[in-house]
Amino acid sequence: MAGALGFKNVGMTFPDGTKALGGVSFDINLGEFVTVVGPSGCGKSTLLRIASNLEVETEGKCEIDRNSIGYVFQDATLLPWRNVRKNIEIIAELHGIEKTKRTKLAQDAIDLVGLTGFEDKYPRQLSGGMRMRASLARSLVMKPRVFLFDEPFGALDEITRERLNDELLRLFQIEGFAGLFITHSIAEAVYMSTKVLVMSARPGQIVESFDIPFSYPRAHSLRYEPKFAEICGEVSLALRGALV
Amino acid sequence: MTVTNSIEETSTIEKSAPPSLRVDDAPRETKDRNLVSDFAGPIVVFVIFISLWYLLSTQVLPPQKRFLLPTPHRVIEEGFLTWSVGEQRGLKPILRSLWDSIKIAVIGLFITILIGTTLATLMATRRWMERATWPYLVALQSAPILAMTPLIRALIDGIRLQRILVVVLIAFFPIVNNTLFGLLSVDKSQHELFSLHGASKFTRLRKLQFPAAMPNIFVGLRISAGLSVIGAVVGDFYFRQGGVVGIGAQIDIYRSRLWGSELIAAIILASIFGLVVFILFGLLSKVAIGKWHTTTRGQ
Image 1 (cartoon, rainbow over the protein chains, first blue to last red):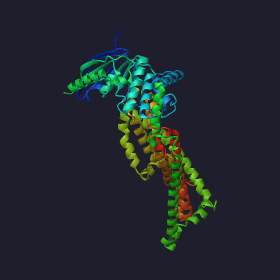
Image 2: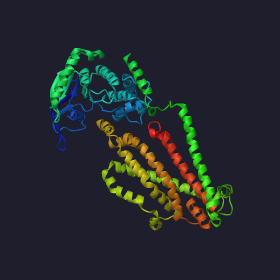
Image 3: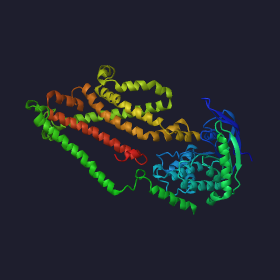
Image 4: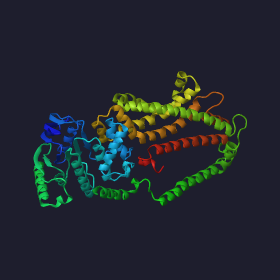
């Protein structure tokens, strides 16, 4: 079947003349998890913003079913005046889904991310990791075919981050969406993905692509295997090359 | 299994969160300590205030001028404990005129809130509206009401309407300013969340901008409510006729007749009214947004 998300030679030049992306092409199918790593300011986030139509590409074309996108922001962006349940319902609410159905959908998502029992808490009563879970659950409610992640775990501590990596992979296996993940962490990229793309500095271009051979489910111990370290090393080298 | 584990893990993180993040389980003892400092402070200030008052009216002022500032116990006796002497003296006429002003202030505040939030909403959703009205709002805020009285008198019939207009003019700016600020300072990524899912302008206002602006709106409300009391008193001064007058006019009567005790009693009651309004809106804000907004605690 055709890819769930396709970039066809996508370029982006901002109105101020900054060239953020230059000719990016790749596809992601359902059941694929692609991570983009690259130097700061190389246009990684711009890729996501184009995919989600928050920005419109100036060259090429991005093909995606815009009605079925989940977008996880850098921070949890929960609405502080809504409790967890109401926060998780918001997207369904915006799509006009009726009350009983969206309560059910929200509860399923809450159970899926392990927030059962915290439904009536407000965001400020939650830890950073729990807020991120709520943010994931919020996007899960509509069962999107394409999931975009903009460095979602960057602000979390190492332990919470690894735990949420596992949680997210579990969700990925259950839901089978097409994932596009942005991160600064090479280990996170290799651990999560079916494929890792390395982007060059601005204007961002895909300079190297690594297929990650490990099968799912992936165990935590994978992080300590020589093969894992080897791939991380290759990605790291490519990233250094991308910097010059 | 992993799910339950991770819940335990994260809930311990929650428990060790800084105290500012906790709501229900604040330690009892800090509450008790707050109770002492909460009451001791105001009481000390009150005692100092009363002592200074006695000092002024019995020592500092020359004897022939002491009628201007009667001692506290005389104010209580003549202003609060005397129900009514003739038409103007005693507690009854003071309360009657205060009640008259309260009605004006409340009606004026209600109109202010209605027009103010509507205008702020229009300004937040239409850039040209903001551009067109903002400079004049700022100018209006600093325009002296005193200078406008002849115009108000010429344009509007009826003392009550004129007084209400003064309340609106004085209380208007903070509610517009704070509401507008609140509506416009919503987090960018929260806006993007709504854009991603095709939210209309109206949905965005209702489900994002207004709830997010509530803390600011309540700040504006509280300032405007306080100003509506001032507006009512000021309006009384300039717009009055025979019969029942507002507290401002009543104060002016006492001032001109040199009835010090009634004058001070009336001032105290007008101030208490202002205080009650302030506390009321503080409580309202706590009830409405205290659950999720932190700064309303500790009030």
